[in-house]
Structure formats: structure tokens, C-alpha cells
Length: 406
Image (cartoon, rainbow, N blue to C red):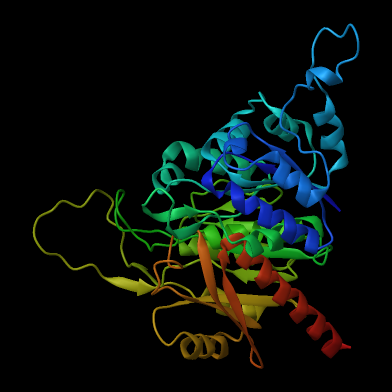
């Protein structure tokens, strides 16, 4: 397996040397390309010594390499490299290189290579917290995600600029594991139909207001993306406003009732159901036909919504694996196990939402994967990384169920 490691110009460029070594330890052949800015932080000789290979630093051949009479020093090596690599990995990925990739700019070796390759691409951003949170950067990252680029979210902590927050390059081991997952194209869900729910439902009170929750839908969408990458047919029923993940059949819903109808409609063809949505437990008994005016206190009468998970368990076909989610703020394992038994699902993913790092709308997650007989810790990571770990457990659970049925 051959990877082109692209290094762009940030203080975290020195960590790319550690990443190159970590990839080599995983039997991955590494060659490096550097932007001009990256060379201000780390010299190409460092990577040449580590990899034993030429480091690409420019689209232009050194003058001494031009043949006699050649009018320019333009080199088309990036085309050959683009066709030869198994993956393109950018670490660190600065705001500048992310913008170039998102907008199709190609003015150096790395950005031109990105446009020329059809191989999988992974970026590990690193920058100042305000740059990372800027709407332009967020839009560029979302554009790349929609094009199938895998993003290893930066860690939070003390940054080189003296500020604290998200923007620090993810741990080298985390990036290396993500690269390996990208290269080892597991097809363990080929032939499966995975039905995923995501997002928080909205129950209207009047034409303007609704009862809702803080779920972003990011975890469910990450599960859907990961399942597609592992060969599954994926149907995503989502109440989120996130863009459609590539390769999924997407059903947009708003209320719990709409989600229930969509899930039950698709249930017959599903072999795996992952209920990651945060479905409202209550809705208004009566919806006001016009906007309610502020005129003092009033009472809002609520009624419970239907239990979609219970209906899925009751109506699923034999052999279908059902995974529920439990967002808990206390007694994580005990409360999740109680829900596991109450719902009758095959497994439950428990998330501790008391932590701001892993709470609603975070880009990271962690938790527990519980079955009646076992518990697996889902180590902290990006929601895509946690989604992969969940699907690892789903695959194992399916194999166990198949052996039992035999």
C-alpha cells in the first residue's frame, strides 16, 4: 500500500514526520509532498531521510533536470503520482489547503495532485481555533466531506498561538489508524441493507414553534457514511439539516410520526437497524392553527409519541440486528442496560452527554457498546471513527447471531 503524505504549512508540520514513521510501521509505503509554506517549518531533507524517497516540493523541475532546448521546467510527475498512490493524506491540513481543495484551485504540486487523483483522500486539519470555527472553513470542510474526503477532526486543547480550543492536530496514532481504515477497504457489510435514523425530531406547537432537542444528527450521518464505505446499501431516515451523505438513500422527516412511518416502511428490507435519532418523547396534544401570542402564562398539554424502537423490534424480520442509542447524563451503564432490557434490542450504544466534549452537536464521541452478555468501550474519537467502531461490533454481533441460528 502506498500513501502520498501531503504536508502543508503549520506549526504541526513537525508531527508529519512522526506520522510518516507511524505509517511505515504499519507496512505502508510513504512518499511526501510539501507546500512552500511547510518548508519554512520542516526541511524536505527530514522526510527524504525518513522515507528514503524524493520529496515533492514544486510543480517545476529543477533547472538542471531540464533537457536541452526545453522551454520550461514544468513537470507532470503529479499525474504519475496521482495514478500510483492508494491514498492521499494531508496532515497537517491548513485552512488554506482546505480552501484550495474545496474550490478546485491547483497552483502547486499538492493541490494539483488532489484534483488529479481518484484515490481516497484523508485530511487532518490543524489551525487556530478561530480559523477552524470560521464559517468559511466549516463550509469548505463540509464541501470536502460531501465529496467523500475523510476528515480527522482536530483535538481540543492548548494551541501554539496561546489560545485554547479545537484546532490541534489529532494524535498521530489516531490519524494512522484512520489511514489504515481508509486503505483496508473492509467489505464486511456487502449485501446488507442498513437502516439508520438520525437527528432530533421537531414536534410543532404552532406554525412557528416546536418542541425539539439538541441532537445534530452527526452521529447517525457518520454511521450511514461508514456503512456505505463498508459495502452496505444504506437508507438514512433523518430529521437533521445536515447535507445528504454520499451513496445513501435519504428520507427526510421532521416529526416522530413521520419518522415512524418512514422506518416501518423501510423495515422489511433491512438486515441492520441503527436507531441513532433522538426522537421526541412528547408532542403537543393540539397544534395551534395560528401563531401563539405572548399574553401571559398558558398551559401546554402534551401526549407521548409512539415508541419507534419497540415497534421495530416487534415487526422486524428474523435475523435483523437492531441497535438503539441511549444518551445519558448519569449512571451511564446502568441506565443503558435498563433500556437495553426494556426495549428488547440486540445492542445499545450509550453516550455520556454530561461531557461537553462528547455532548450534543460535538464533532467527537465516546461511549459503551452493550449487549446482554458484553460491554465494549468505544474510545474517544471523531464521530466517524466511533461509527467505524460501532459497525465493527455490529459485524461481530451478526456473525455471532448467524452461528446461533445455525
